[in-house]
Image (cartoon, rainbow, N blue to C red):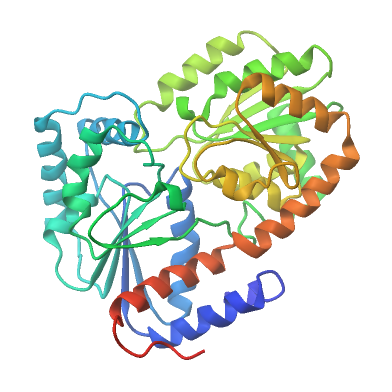
Length: 403
């Protein structure tokens, strides 16, 4: 499987990945998160686990189980960590811990390295067996409600290390801290090349006209993704440039607010026949790929964002991208070079019109964007980084790997 990246990923990434694989061969590496479908974390794990196994590492992926009450609490924790006012009582935190305890009794947590993803399973650290335990925070915790952060930190401080996506997300803790941005898999169904007929088939199935520019945002239906703001920007553009808007997303089993936000978006879109709201089933990777390839301009107008991998996905397909200047999006978009960063619906509308009216500029941005993603945000680099952190944590004070 690694050979398929030979002429795609940078040679240095592949060399380091193989050397680290040799050093950690036959060791066990466990990942734990809260869902197998929906969102970037699950998507990355689906692609990364086979790569780690091919390197000779015993890689496993476990998912914690919880009821509606648990995921309602963890959604509040998520929102509070991103700065929203949330009421999370002591009883809620106790229930969060109780659900983690039940999962600890059922899951096999024995591994040489354990990577716990996000707040939902963070309390599993209280039941650790052996090995290096690392907490992977995928969300923006740069400006949290401190009561929420302090409550969660009680667990996070018990890990050996914490990993964040962007330097400004990191918070002071008495553990080793590392920065590892997420990534995309260029050979997955979501990112591989598609034929014109495959793209045309998707457009026909969804009823999307291709005789006008297509504006697209792919994201779960979450208020932090600002789908209402995207519709506002589209309506401003529509006054001058005839176009259509596509809002596409999949449900996530750990997000209880998704249905309510989807209904809000449908109501706000009203009966505009040029707005296409698509609730795609999980694992609709090929359809998302086709939507991104048929798009003229791609948006990720987030108000808060952990990283926003849909930005990298669209840039890989040589599309000009407009992103909210939040979270990890500025790490991907070099403003004015590979896309534009925006702060409002009005700003998004201005940049959309600029791109629609200057197709040569849009083409140049897309080409630069693909090379930027190739050099910085492919899955081979992220797998390399995870193994490097594990190796470094195990070999502190000892002679390190010679390359």
